[in-house]
Every structure is written in C-alpha cells, then in structure tokens.
Image (cartoon, rainbow, N blue to C red; front, side, top):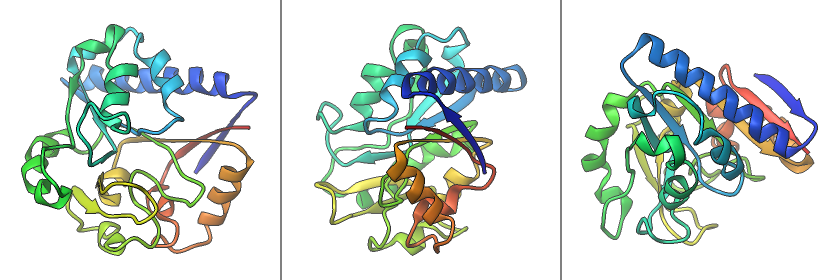
Amino acid sequence: MKMMEYADREMAAINVANVLAGELKNCLLRHDRASLAVPGGTTPGPIFDVLCDADLGWSSVHVMPTDERWVPPDNPRSNSRLIRERLLTGRAARATYVSLYAPGDRPEDSCAALEPALEPELPLSVLLLGMGADMHTASLFPGVAGIEAALQPDAPALVALHPETVPEPRISLSARVLNDAIAKHLVIFGADKRAALERAMDLPAHEAPVRAVMDEMTVHWAE
C-alpha cells in the first residue's frame, strides 16, 4: 500500500484525476480500449469534474460503476446518475458506459444477465474506490449476509448484497474483480477514515472488506 497525502481535498481531486487520466492514456497506447471502474457517493464528484475534460481517447474507454444501488438510473441515489452527470460529460461524453443495473426487484435475479457485458472489460484497467467509516468499499459491507462468498478468490464477477444499514439492495463487483485491477486507487478524506483504514489492516476481510482489495493499492488522503 502506498499512501499519498495532500494539503486539501481540492488538490487531492485534481491530482487523482490527473493520475487516472495518465493511466488511461498509457493503457490505450498498448491496447485498443481501457476499462475504468469508479464509485458513487460524495467523494468522487470533484474528481469526475476534472477527469471529464482530460484529453485522451475517451471513445476507447469503457466506464462502469464499482457497485450500484438497486434503483432506476434516474433515481437521485443511483450511482449511474452521478457518473453520467459528473463524469460522462465534456470530452468524456464519448466514453461507453457499462451498466450494472437492470429493471427488476432483486439484483440477484439480474447478475447472470449483466455479467456477459462485464467479462470483456476484465481485468479492469483502472480502478477508483472509496471507503466508508465502517470499512466497506464498493458495496462490500462488513457482516452483511453473503460477504464471505463475495470475498472468495472464485467469487463470480458480480455479487448481490442486501445490507441492513442502507435503504436498498446492492449489486457489486466482487473482491476478486476489484483486487485484480491493473491500477488501483483508494480516495479517503478525514481523520476518521484514515483511522478506519489503519484498523482495517489488522482485521479479517469479512470484518473490514476494504482489506481484501488492498494489494498494491495507492491511497490518496486529505483532511
């Protein structure tokens, strides 16, 4: 794990966006396309605002969420909506979006149908993650039913989870898919999340799921 510290969150957002853009450019020098997986929540928005205007071959970039709240794409809580409004705009509007949502009541009923579109994107070229104070990442929540299966090396690419601490079911890339990404970045802000990450390093992954995806991770932190 490599830790990068910044004077403030604005500087962190700018630098992370520039790093992601550079890694996507390098990937496209060697391959005909690149895959980028990004989180929802409040942390990545400012990063997206910078990254969306990066000068690179966006028409060859495939963007997907690391996880999705099981709500329609126009719902304010949808990660898809955040990504479309804040990242897939400007130059990045030329990117292809890979959805992790399908109409239906339960995410587990759609995993098999969604996976074929996901498999060609693997391993992920570039991954951006966030982390909650409870040490969850993507929608891999500690203690949720099914978390141990989602953390296994032979887990499917997509897993459905029903955390009791959030309003809706979730679908998530499994720990295997996240950890296998070629370039990996975790962005956390505040002393509480830094302390949580430090605690996670001493806990089993089912209690601190972020622990399962930290191999060769670059962590970006600002107060």
